[in-house]
Image (tube, rainbow, N blue to C red; front, side, top):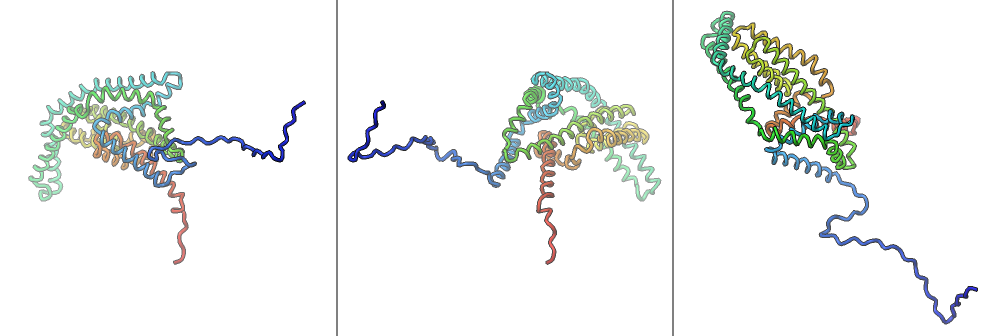
Length: 401
């Protein structure tokens, strides 16, 4: 039998029921000086906060470039190398080669090519500079004779009132001074080119930094992607892809154009017998990185040197034919195949960016100019599309008064 529970008597007070115990929320420790702020549910950044973040990051980036501009050149150059070599390194990694080994092999191959080019070309350039210095007086005399002959023909054609003896002497002196200045400038540029860079930093630091950046390139991109604000991550990724497409097409296409044009001009000028054809052709190819500037500079230099060396209009005509052929090949074969419509970088915009970067930060600015120009161009096109799709553009015109 189970014992019966005692019934409460009339004199015994009833005991109130005890409510069940509930889990009490944990109390947060006291905050020091009110930081960090409490998270009361989801929070949304205001427009002013987002604008402040963007402007602050841009200001910090420009300040860092200005502050460390003296030492940033090898690191930026290493970043350019890593960006350029990432696609072949990625292809090697996909076929089973470890990423670190693939990065080491690519940087080693590029360094070997650069060293081989220096060993082969530098003695030839030094020899060409010696020829320029030795023949400079003869060049001045030759171009003076050619200019005087042209002015005498002009005097016979237009009369002594238009072309007199004083004008002829002035033109001959100015032409000789121009050739002298040109020869001296080219000699100083090539002879003192090594002094433009810190040899240790460029030769030693750049390949090492390029290797580490190339080895960890995918992880760096993934880490930066993880830091993107979630609200705008999709748009930022699309802008980054567009910038990468434009920049990769322009850089790789333009570098191949420079290589092909440099070899073509050097071979063509040497073939027509120009003594300094090698140095002028390579200079024109390298400067072709700036649209139209390389070809125009090489053309003027080669014509002046041809007039000084040959002393006849036939020799000048052969040099002109080489550059005309080069322009035809560039405009109708090289540029459409290597660059085409993928670039979306106008030549005037690229020239402005290169010169603006050079004025602001020197050689470092030249390295940063094209990537920044590509990014600004992509962002400008994005905002233009937003504007053309917005009511600000699509609002119907007002009617009536």
